[in-house]
Image 1: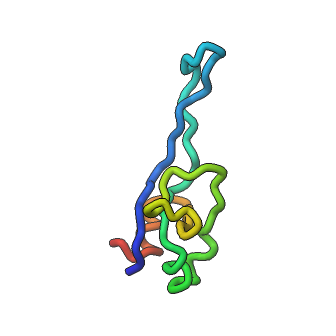
Image 2 (image 1 turned 90 degrees about the horizontal axis):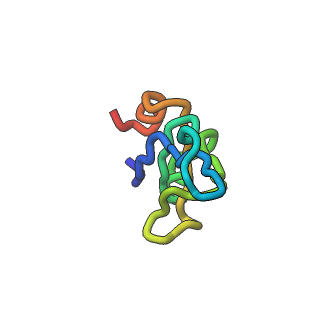
Length: 86
């Protein structure tokens, strides 16, 4: 099994007003998110369709952002099945 870090559902704080007060609901990013090492993608090219390029990272492996590959699955069940986590 490849080394991975489950992020799961990503939620960010909602919009803020000019004073910094939260004025809206959190922003929920669609999908179920998992990070793997680049070497894992080399071992599992079938994961390529799930690779995403996030504008900001919520996790990197040991400060190795260049070696961290972000995956996004439509839902947790799909992600677990594809990664063989069940």
